Image (cartoon, rainbow, N blue to C red; front, top):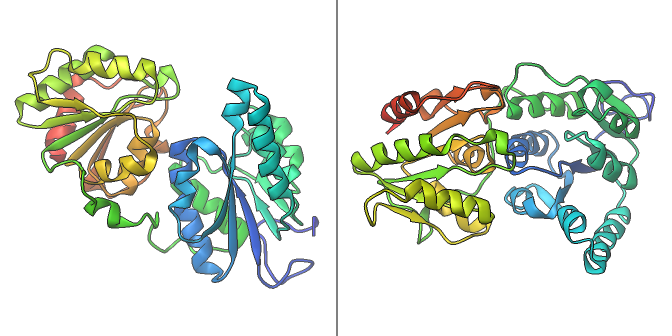
Length: 338
């Protein structure tokens, strides 16, 4: 089967007529998980009945669980092992890997294609492993050695579209169908969701270089409150909690709220019911776009082309790699969307 070439032609050569079982390896991060969901929808539509399993860092396991076509999620405690280095964390990782290795797949598809995902792909048992070329493996070219077949990372495409193109080459999917994240819209109707006059600020990011300047957030927040809007912010660690407090410190009492630390599933109704989301290149911003909320994306160290595609009337993307969006530009985008 390793003699096959991309694009794959199922039913030709050594390939079975249809893939029955596949493993998707996309370990992190939240935004990348969200951007992979439409490709899963494409695969499920092309191959009804296919069993799709997903290997993911345990911190982001709630994302693949949102998709009804995903049969099983292997939640690997990779970060816990790295940070805690405890015997319990190692035992948990070993147990998940043991369960993963008990499965057999026709295809292992790794759109993450870095060393850690390549290791998981190699440990899993499958007839065919597909990932990116060495030069497209996120600066970790050794990862490509884990794959039988290699795909050239699409250039100039949104993250979501790039994964859909990759899926088409591997699984003969249809790119002409709608972008379907398959996230159950019941979250928009759950109690406790944000009110119609609420703006959600996704200010935190996993990498400091993605952050929008604090004084910019403070100035924009003041304008939003002056316009009669109420703000909600969340946090994932102590630094983000302090940042959220500093953003709203000078605002009138009751005009902004910092939510308790919540799980991803608990955040879904908050985002889904927000009138508008303003955020940096972070998972909640991509999730808001997937939930069809109006989004202002603030890009500082990454390109807007990475943003989850959505209807033009629902999104404004500002800045870029090395270009910090101005306060006035952000406010203008807010005015256009609210």
